[in-house]
Structures are given as C-alpha cells and as structure tokens.
Image (tube, rainbow, N blue to C red; front, side, top):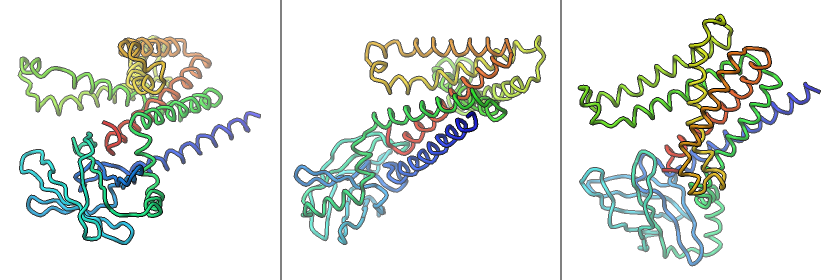
Amino acid sequence: MRGTVLFLLRTAIGILIALLAAVFFLLADNAPSLPNVPFAGIAIRAGSQTVHLPNRIFRCDQVAQQVQCNTTLQNQTLSLIWQQSSNAPPTLSRCQALFAGKPLQCSDAGMDYIGRKGLLSYYQLEGLGLSQSQLRDLRRQYRWSNALSQIGEARLLQLSTAVALLTGVLVAIINWFYPGRLAEVFISFAAAAGTFVLVWQWFGSVPYDRLTGFGISPEIWTGLAPSLALLAALLTGIVTARLLEGRFRRRDRIGPILITGAGMFSLTFVSLPGLFQTFAPLNSPSLMNFAPLLAAGISTGVGVATIGLLWVYSDRSIRTFLSMGSGLGAFGLLSLLFLISLLELGYAD
C-alpha cells in the first residue's frame, strides 16, 4: 500500500514538473520582453475582434533615428515604422504602418512596464482589410499569445501561486511519509534562498543618506548589499545542512537551531505576499493593510516551530520538520521563480 501511495505521489510530482516545464516554455515563447523589440505589444482591431500578435514574429532594425519592424501575415508584409528620440531612454513617436504596401491606422493603446526595458507602448492596428475567416486563422495561429493577453497579469500571478501551493502540499506529503537525505538538502537550499532574498531586500531598503554618514557611497552599497546577502545565505544553508545531518551535540545546537529558524522565517516571509494576492478574501483592501504584520506573525510562527522541532530532535519532530520545511521550500522557491520569470519576461511589473 505504501509503495502504491509513493508511486502515485511521485507520478503526480512528475506530471506537475512536466506541466511546469511546458508552461515556462510557453511563457518564454510568447514573452513581451525581447531584446530587439521596442514595443510592449501589437494588436489588430477589426470591428469587435481583437487579435494579439506575439512580439517574437517581428524583426526590427534601426537606421539613424528611424525604427522599422517587419513580419509576414497571410503571405503579406506588415511594416511598422517609428521615429526614435535621441534622449535617454529613447522613446518612439509617429507610428506608421503598412500592410501589403497600403497604409494603416496605427494608434497608441496604452503603456506598461516590460521587464528591464522599462515603460513601453502597446499599439493597435486597424484597416488591414482581412476577412473574418483570416482573422480567425490568425487568432488560431497565435492562440497562446491571445490566451495570455486575455488572462492578464493578475490572473497569471494568481495561477502561478496556486500551482506553487499545490506543489508545496504534494512535496510536504511525500516527505512526511518518506523523509530522506534529499529533503534535508532541499530544505537547506530553500532556507538559504529565502535568507538571501530577505536580507537583500532589507539592505536595499536602507536610505542612501544614512550610508553617506558612514562614508559609504550608493555605488559601493549597491555592490556590497548582494554580497552580504549571499554570505548570510551561505551561512544559513551550511548550518542547516550540518544540523540536519546531526553534526552538532545537543549543547552546541542552540546557535545553529536559531540560524535555521531564522532561515525558515525568511523563506516564509518572502513567500507570503503572492499567497495573499491569490485568494480573494486575503486580498481585500482592509486585510492588505495588515499584510506585513500578518506575514511577520505567520513567519514567526514557522520560525518558532522550527526551533522547537529541532531542539526536541526526535524521529517524529525531524520528520515533521522535513515535511513542513520541504513543503514551504517548494512553495517558496517556485513562487519566487514564477515571479522573477513573469517580471523578466514582461508579463508583470
């Protein structure tokens, strides 16, 4: 029976990993943020229909102050031309569009932050003269780009957090019934990652005017902050791994246990904002005002539970910690991975 349960759980994890890989490929293939594309997105408007075109199909070149992007639709060339300003960062103006050599109406349809490229514009094209059948063919051809446009940023963040939560629950169940060395290594890495993010965020929030009083320039601090965060993460990961291996005698465990507890606090604290935004009751304006306090309270509870379980250090307490820690680790790391990917690819800002 235990073998059957383990097989089913591992199968579920395997299917989930395959689906996650497919989702990441899909997001990357239709990403708004591409190196040589100077806009956020292009959509064709025809009556009540709107067809979104993926940015990857455009090939863009710049000659002097003019930027031109071309693609092929229905065996005809679609060309978009802008004038680019000389200021920094450069901006586009005077959109002109040609389809099969005929001019189109090209209008600005809003702006959004797209990854590291900053604020870019969406453009809407009208007057291509395509039939309803041709528009349906285009929508079918670029179905994923249109589906992602319909889903939107908020739902993408909610879906990614829900998937991360499901993964965390499955991992926690597996490591409750079948704890092992792999869970110990994973928890050590997850606690280190959470510490890195939290410490870097804390150092990044230090006002520059306080640093200048100590003779530290903003440029030096920008390079120093991630280095200090990395040192804290390495310390947390190494200490947690050695503690779970049983390398410390009981009287020497207090310091390592506190460090591991701080690592689990950090991991929980950086993972909770996405969870609050996923579930509507948690995302209410009145509750979101208390979100930092609520996150701190839950994270403190996890940290205290970690300290208690590791101090007892019985078979059952270690199993409980491995289940809790691996589940939180899977949820936290996957949440961060989704968030970073959505930001870098231009789906979220």
